[in-house]
Length: 235
Image 1 (cartoon, rainbow, N blue to C red):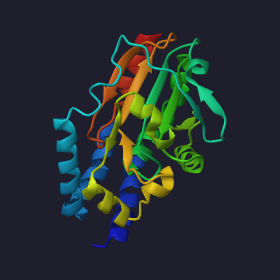
Image 2: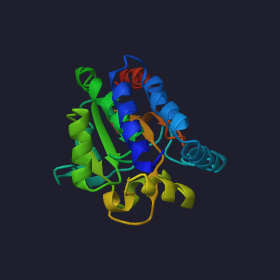
Image 3: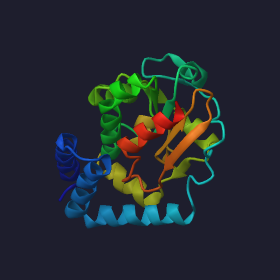
Image 4: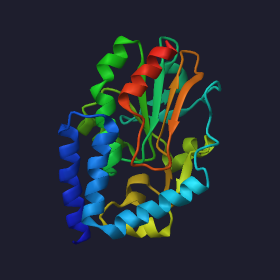
């Protein structure tokens, strides 16, 4: 199977996962299983990268529950600068890091967040997504998900680096991702191949972290029901 066919088949898997009435990680597994069925080479490379990151405890040094999430000032998909403080004060805030609009798992994550946006709003909570991409790609991710929440551009992964969330994907994954047609340097505006460990921080109205969920295995994300439960605890 060619690299372009792989992406085409993963697009089908993404659509199937979106339509599935199931927990988020079961929907994620639809994509992961399709990758394995289509290309052992790609799937094995992902496993090696994840093993490396887990051995290094990637992301473990990020801010923990009970600590304040450091402030940020980042542009949203329209170019408006947004500060953490503007989201605080009225209720809980969920801050979620994703790798980019090209990643089918991140796209599915964004869909899952958009699906509970109204319920989160009824709990006086706000959702903020952060990705290391240029504005127009974040706008595409927001539009596809049907989201109302902002998607902020963390150019050069500066904020993720400050939180100890940024990782290098490695030379093998650089080659495989690029050959599949996902041109990450173009999306990010640099050739570093640095991405955030997918993570979600649920904050109380003062900015204190109530719950932290992160995993170097980008094929797994915080379950939406767990996110809503954390929001309720943070109220």
